[in-house]
Image (tube, rainbow, N blue to C red; front, side, top):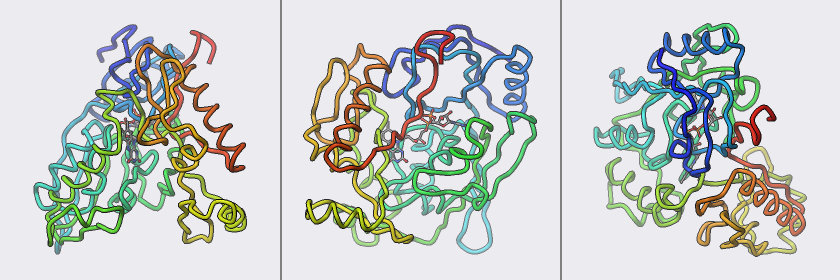
Length: 342
Ligand SMILES: Cc1cc2nc3c(=O)[nH]c(=O)nc-3n(C[C@H](O)[C@H](O)[C@H](O)COP(=O)(O)OP(=O)(O)OC[C@H]3O[C@@H](n4cnc5c(N)ncnc54)[C@H](O)[C@@H]3O)c2cc1C
């Protein structure tokens, strides 16, 4: 097992925040993941898994061992009828997988195009975009339990998926290394174009590749490219409130976007709440609120996690003062502000 010391993580997080890992290793197989867990156990040090670093706020120091999944194999298993099973190693680049499946005429993941990161992280927050969530195509998740080193397979039901939520953010948070996903896609065309203006951007009877191209084009127009401007996508989840509170807000703000949910509650648009709090385009030192998409906090360079988290708190406090709604942060904060002090 190759362990690198004092590894610069700035290029390994899409916010581009300065951070250093005490040590880092890449694991391409279940056995290598077990070796990494044993290595950390013997030394009594902490272990952190990082994928593409696109849903993280990294503090300056990551103590112990950082593990990066690096297995990139994936393959198809034809099933009876039109369905096809896809076995995907945790280190596969998510967007490249989506493109490859669409090019082979396989439907199911096309609306999830251009979401950064690795496949292994996709179940953590049940990635979703353009009316589709990972849960709809996921059959199973292979993982290793960190405490027992035992390999397990969780069914979709056991993953307890919800809106930007799963068992991996709840009961199993920080307790597993995901090593493989099993997806189920289909050769039967099933375009999902009911979100935004997607339908207007594809030809009649589109191919899955047409939908990937349309979703990618919309995303490029709306979201800053992390390669150009550091960001972690949506910084807050859309708040879900009860219907009585939603009605009171709608009485005051008739134009407020709101989406009734199956359970009777109402989802609000966090970006609209931030925009209407007058924060879109705000710049505060090295960080700010994106000028086209208020839900995205950006790092202009030269800043720190502390600055970004202070801005996030300021945004949340202003939205709460105006709308009485508390925003919840989406990216996970990892590491220590000062070595030895989490
Ligand atoms: C420009 C941009 C747009 C985005 N758009 C969307 C979007 O439309 N929809 C959406 O849902 N998300 C979106 N995101 C967020 C992000 O891309 C996803 O959450 C993605 O799945 C994170 O993958 P990652 O490999 O970068 O994970 P990381 O950020 O590296 O890690 C995220 C979390 O998962 C854990 N983790 C990662 N891999 C594993 C593993 N193998 N086993 C166990 N734990 C693991 C980490 O410890 C961490 O807690 C966007 C981000 C950006 C920057």
